[in-house]
Amino acid sequence: MNCAKVRWLLLTDYLDGQASETLRRDIREHLKSCAACAAFEKAAVEKASRPFTGIQPVKPPESVWQNIKEAIAEEDARAAEYRPSFLERLRDLARDNFLIRRPQYAFAAVLTVVIAVVVFFNSPLHRRMVVEDYLRREAVYLASLDAPANGEGESELGLGTAIEKYLF
Image (cartoon, rainbow, N blue to C red; front, top):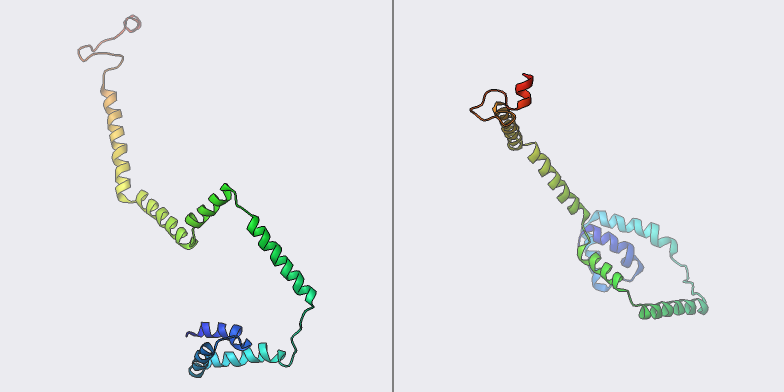
């Protein structure tokens, strides 16, 4: 048994006398070998148990118990009559099957994807692709400047249209 479990059991079942004999024996063995837990037990007895020694249990009136029993019976009756709608069943199904039970893992996965995207777009490969794309576009543009304008063929070097011939 580890110390955390022993301390939890000390504060719950052991000091109240509700622990089974096997569990009480295991706790006593642990207390013999662990000075920290033994000191914890002593402090727990002093602070939690000793102030209540000699106090007689209070028995509530029968009407209180009757009210509690009636409330439980009413709740059970309502629960038996209740039938969830299709949307409620669908919501529960989605919650049970798709709910992220460990948000820290979801956060880590999203963070990993974001880092991968940032690294890719800042990588030399991506920068080289951007530069190559820019150079390709510039080459196409410069080649288009050397092409004949206004539908001029390669054989025609003069003015192409009648208006141009008139004006120039």
